[in-house]
Length: 59
Image 1 (spheres, helix red, strand yellow):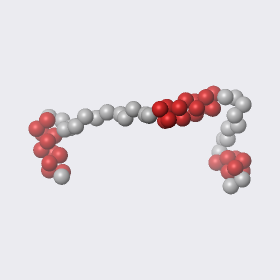
Image 2: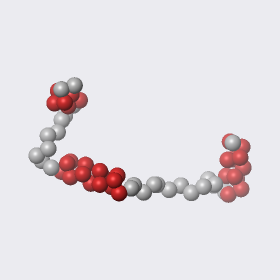
Image 3: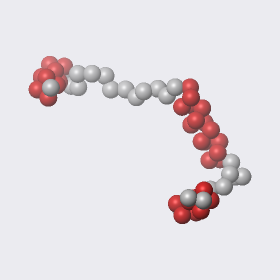
Image 4: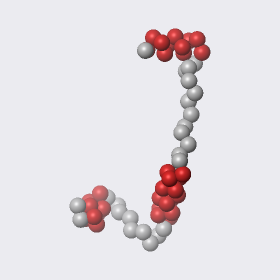
């Protein structure tokens, strides 16, 4: 498999496939937007360390 990849790379003068980022689906986009809204909201409690978070979650 490695030899096949290397030969194809030589033949193509580069990586023999497209490199591109996957586009997030609608659910992921909504989750990202929600996270950003929460991050900007001054009324949402934040934590400075994991111990504070664990205490708040009672873990």
